[in-house]
Image (cartoon, rainbow, N blue to C red):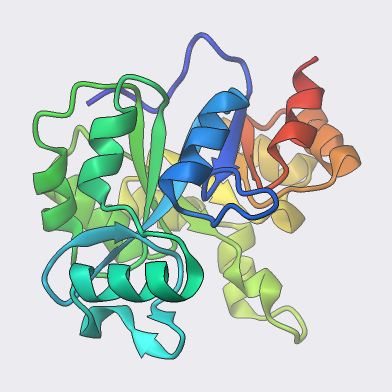
Length: 244
């Protein structure tokens, strides 16, 4: 597999769950095609496992109150298409469709599927590809199974909690030890964690920085001025303006 660094581009604009304006559903082939059409540097998608072992692109663990792990791929596909008019893609078809088109970031959501993900990546010879996760153990396990896989630890869930800063916040703001233990290659912080001090500390440790999820143009410009390496966004066409 390719590496995490895109030498041809100084700054990544990463399409968060593809690009899904208007009626397009996120994390679908249609959303990924839109991201390609608007020239995203990379596509991010979430990976979960279904009852029959199928790896699919899905952010939430449930659909209309039903656990994904309690449905087979055929069952879930029939439900989504019949009720909502969209179809969840499998990891296998995404790898085949985009391997020579655009780099991919696979965010593993379900702990314990690391080996199965790597099995589907066997023989992958396409564009750059890397694995990300909020779970330190997932990143550590990926490296144990295949040291050549490029990984990124996602940090910043603590920022979303509506209470005063606590220990988990500081573990996110100072993730150096976590990154070393997980043997991560890069860090993906929530944009509210990113300031000049954070960037300087990460660069001192040689960790590329990709902030999530940034949708306002002025904030994008500010983060880029700090010297981060890229950002995740839902507003792809807006984000492309900072490269002009």
